[in-house]
Image 1 (cartoon, rainbow, N blue to C red):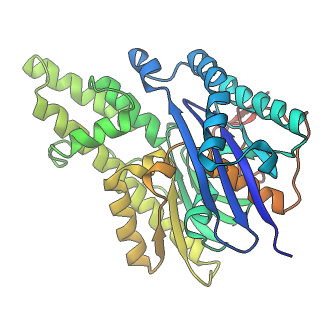
Image 2: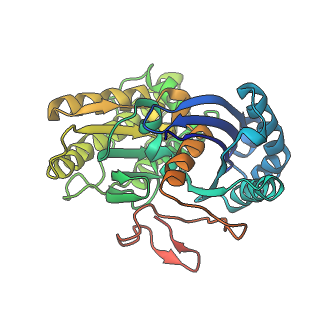
Amino acid sequence: MVQTLTVLGLESSCDDTAAAVVRQPDGEQARILSSIVHGQTELHSAFGGVVPEIAARAHAEKLDICVVQALEDAGLTLSDMDAIAVTAGPGLIGGVLSGVMCAKGLSAATGLPLIGVNHLAGHALTPRLTDGIAFPYLMLLVSGGHCQYLIVHGPEKFTRLGGTIDDAPGEAFDKTARLLGLPQPGGPSVEAEARLGDSKRFRFPRPLLDRPGCDLSFSGLKTALMRMRDQIVAEKGGLTRQDRADLCAGFQQAIVDTLAEKTRRAIDLYLSEQPSDPVIAVAGGVAANSAIRSALETVCEEKGARFTAPPLGLCTDNAAMIAYAGIERFRTGARDGLDLTARPRWPLDQTSPAMLGSGKKGAKA
């Protein structure tokens, strides 16, 4: 008997408050019935980045509104849901806790099963939501807080091939925007400026390309840009609009070149497993960058692998991916109780050594 699952998803790990309803008949393509996202850009714009306390308060104020809107848009009620899925980590702990407590309240009131979802798994499983691709596939998860290459074997089985040992690309974009006086979020601002610049005028380092493997580093790029900016200011007394555009173009090209080469290496490792239908997927907010997408498509074409990326609206944080990841976990028999814990750290690959170190709260990545 085909079991159709309809799941309400909640997402509040950073600065987007979201709720969505996703439905999937067993063995068929999932459908997004509704997806509501309330951003917080205006709340944080004066601070040059996300302020955790402000974000947590905004989540607490908006989550119930998002849930009501998502159910109304789907034309359904809570009684039509089969489960409630919620981001239980990793992320800013205040925001994650807001979502988990909201989901617990809904579960306790309705008796619906509760499913805690790893936010990174939501991104990693998005290609199955949008394109129905089969396991295993190679995923480049590239966002504001994370960057890693993963072989996705199943809903809860991931092998990390490499990742950033310091800043994530999105974080580097945001810091670059602040250094150059561009508005947040930094990714779109730097990309827009880069379109007007000459990527060859300033030469930035391509970190770790002289070392084997798929690990990445982006912290030094920010430092190199800051030094170049200061040198121009010292020589000319300030930055012209063209100076800023050229700096952005050179910085972005360094990230593009680094990701392209590391992706070649990751694809080689993935292809060594002889997948029947090689697929390379990219997800996360930085996947919305058109220059990065274009370079990755070219690499995949060179390697004879199929490239896929979610629509731009599903690259950034959203609750549809959480609802779908909840469906995948639900079908494996996974359920969580009201003792579900909000986790600031939660690596997808539980067997590989921590890349960024560990502490009392666990491995960072």
